[in-house]
Amino acid sequence: MSMARFISLFAAAGVFVPLIFQVIWLVVDSYPSIGRSIGYGLHKITLVFFPSSFVMMAASEESLYLGLLLIAIAVNVVLYVIIGVAIWCGFKKHYVILVLLAAVLSVMWWRIITL
Image 1 (cartoon, rainbow, N blue to C red):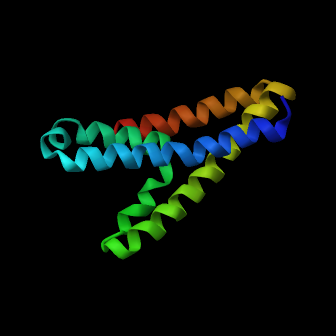
Image 2 (cartoon, one colour; image 1 turned 90 degrees about the vertical axis):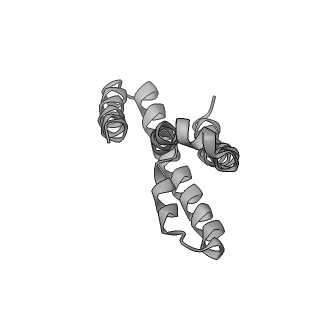
Image 3 (cartoon, rainbow, N blue to C red; image 1 turned 30 degrees about the vertical axis):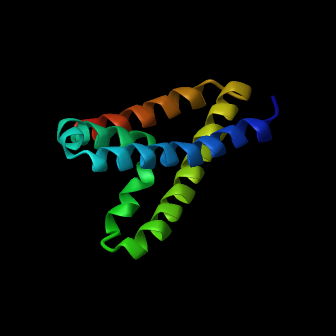
């Protein structure tokens, strides 16, 4: 598999993951009883896989929501591409890159999960 194809898979995941979470949140927001039971955990999972979603907290008006969502998705694509490049380099050049990436992601995810 070429590097461009490998990275394009990460870029596609950077788009589809936020869209999937948006659908999940639409369903959760439609049923308040579900939101009360899983809302807090779902927020944490969303931040782990869609870290740029914090940008959307500024959407106090409905008119801002779509624009902020597109910005958050674009930032998420960049983050996923950076991770994809690091994984590619780790497999092709040196495994230390994979260890460093795993350590950085583990620390970031631990901080998010323990909020």
